[in-house]
Structure formats: structure tokens, C-alpha cells
Amino acid sequence: MTMLTTSEIVCGLAHYSCCGCLGSRFEWRVSNYKFNIWFVVNHSSSYLIGGVLGNVLIWNSSKMDTARRTGGIKYECLLFDIDDTLYPLSLGLNLFCRKNIEEYMLEQLHIEERKVPKMCLDLYREYGTTMAGLKVLGYEFDNDEYHTYAHGRLPYQKLKPDPVLRTLLLSMPQRKIIFTNADHAHAVKVLNRLGLEDCFEGIICFETLNPPKQIDCIDVPNNNQLLTDLTESGCFNSHSRILCKPSVEAFEAAIRIANVDPKKTIFFDDSVRNVASAKIAGLHTVLVGHSDLVPGADYVLNSIHNIKEALPEIWDMREGNQKQQIQPPAVETMVLA
Image (cartoon, rainbow, N blue to C red; front, top):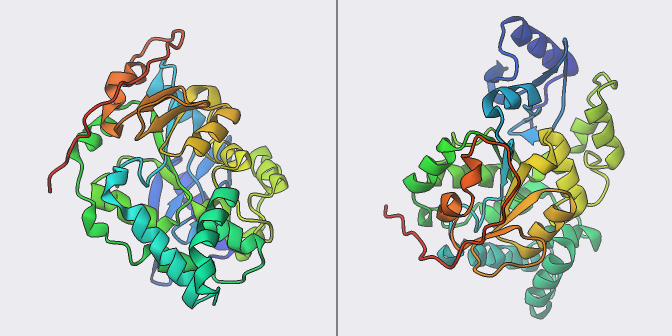
């Protein structure tokens, strides 16, 4: 990984703040490397705020921009999981992913073959991801290598552009942010295949909550309370356990990174336990891909395409008391290639 020096980052931010590009996304080329950079301005100073996005540790977040764009709307931000949420579980990518992880455990970690399937599932259930569980057990491996093995060989061709979902997302006035346990490369591939790459403000992913240890040492002003809180919480400490959903700490970190009010934020996910933890963290919650309401879920959608029928208040510019709506089972919308 190519790293920028502190002076390069600070100078770059200062340059773009003078150019009037505050709160914007821009491309920065250093030594022929292309970086996607996000930044935020707090009063007159620039600070590094979030996790790794591509190769650089910066996050874009502005509550002032949100207030201007959403006006009096009662929800300011929508957080979306990706896998089996933005596309249906029936595509089976999760099964391919599990197979790849089991092969990694067998071939790279040399775990006894008869133990692998049960161990893979048990660790997933206990720690949120199999990867997190393997780390807790003391297995040492490169995170990027693991993700390449687990996701790099997935049949992404199964994912097709979804113009229906794209239209829905673009019509929503709120900030929209991805929050996934997956690595950044996988998230980008999925969004590109679905034709949703420009529908979201940013991506909170594995690298955001678990950055490389080189990032921990970047010297930046320490008077930014957000950065201080994140450091003290441990979510930027690469020497700690892996931080991921369904940990409530992961949701609290995501809330602070995105700089959102959980009382005005809706979280969409296909996982019952993720939704339950999100509720504990103070978020409004939507369980996707299910028909029955479960504890912790405020809404349930059979398909992500049913958002407008179940939550018309996303488009309602009036502040008002939340009225719970339960989406009845619906026929899954098929998107043709």
C-alpha cells in the first residue's frame, strides 16, 4: 500500500479548502497513484476523520450540508448493508463466499478438513464474521489476502444492473451511506455491478473500522472531539480485535464516523442480529428479505424494492410522529439483464 505523508495530506486539504471544494470528493494524484479522497471541514480547520477508502484514510461528512439538503425532513441519513440487502439472497453469493472461506481455512490455515464447516459457521455466529473469530483464536493471516480469497473469486456476473432500485435511491433526499462488514474492493464491485456506484455518499467497510496499523500513527491535530472519541473507543486500533457488525460498538463507531443523529437515521440490513444491535445503538431499523417482524426491527421488507410502500415518510418533507408500517409479503421484483 502506498501511503501519503502527513504533510502531503494536510497540504492537499489546505489547497482544496482554498479552492472552495469543502465537503467534496476529489481525485488526488501522487507519484502516479490515484487516490479517492473525502474530507470534512470543521470551522476553519481540516481533520482526518474516518477509515480507509481505497488507499487513504479520510471520510466526508457534513451535518450542515445535510441540514441544507433535507430541510425539515425527519430522517437525515440512510445506512445500507450491501450483501443480501441491495440484491436478493436467492442469488446465492453468500454460499459461494462461505465455500471460499472454508477453502481458505483448509488450504491456507491448515485446519483439519472435518472441522472446517462447523468451525466456519460457529465462528460466524459467535463473532459476527468467521474472519473475526479466526483472529480471536490466534490465527495469523493477511487481511487483504483473506478478503481476496473470500470475495475475489465470487461470481459477480450473477449481479445485474437494478434500475428500479437506482431510481428509488436517487429519489431519496437523505444522505445515503453503505455500512458493510466486507472489504472496500468487494463493496465497490457489487455497487458497480448493480449500477448503484453513484447513489451513495460513502462506504463504511472493513478497512474503515479496522485500518492498517500504519494509519494509526498519522499525526493530526488532536483537538477534534470526533477523532479523539474514535481513537479512545478502539475502533482505529489495529492491534485490537476486529470490529464488525453485529457488535454494538461497530454501530456506534459508524454513527460517529458518518456524523449522524441515530434518531434521524434508518439502517437497512438482511441480518436479524445486525438489526437488533442497530436498534440498541439508537437507529431506526429495517429488516430486508423477510416477511415477519422480529424484535429490534421497526419495519420489515420482503424486498428492498418495497421501500416506498413501507416507508413513504422517507419522501415526506413534514416532521411528524413516526407511524410504524409493516410491509406484507410481496413478490420479489426480478431485474432482467
